[in-house]
Image 1 (spheres, rainbow, N blue to C red):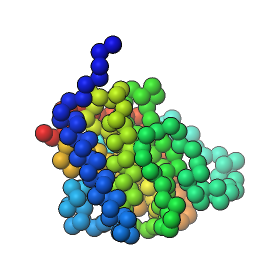
Image 2 (image 1 turned 135 degrees about the vertical axis):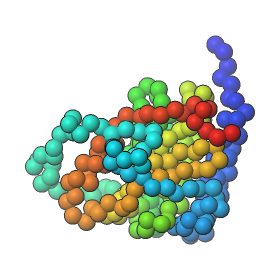
Image 3 (image 1 turned 180 degrees about the vertical axis):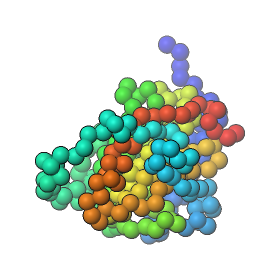
Image 4 (image 1 turned 120 degrees about the vertical axis):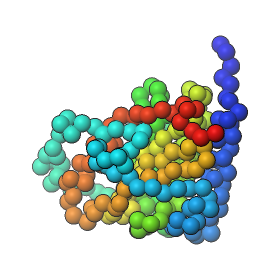
Length: 234
């Protein structure tokens, strides 16, 4: 069997992401949790708009939506059910599989954590979809440190896998549950900047059936896009 050889450019890309993770982690350790555009630019993070409208030019680049015609309507059995949410207080108590993604939790206040991670069957693509919760509100002009740390650590975990040695991009579709105003984020590293495209907050202070259904469509959709060396800037 031939040894797996990583290209120099790919190694440099992973190193850049590792240094970015270190710097964002240092910010969080000073209790800096929300980052404005000026600070994001300093750390080579670019925040852009994202739309979950499949016909919009701002729709995700590396993921497609599950077909609406194949999406079942919620039944009264589930809509009317009462759920015990106490078990979700500490997401670190919930198993998310055997992934080498580093620390995806914070049990100190303000708390955050990963609730669910799914990947493509047979690890045929490097794409990852993730649901996380945040015990913070955030406005549309800021990103949370923990949102950035989560996507970077997932990317690094994917890029460390030998099966993806020919992939330069490890896209992440993150559903960030910021209390009752969640948003969707598509993140990828283009070789120079970490691009984090995010939707406006959805209002889940009521039974927002349309919003839930939209999130479900994208969570169940398939990966797309070029993740080879052609997808990054050199």
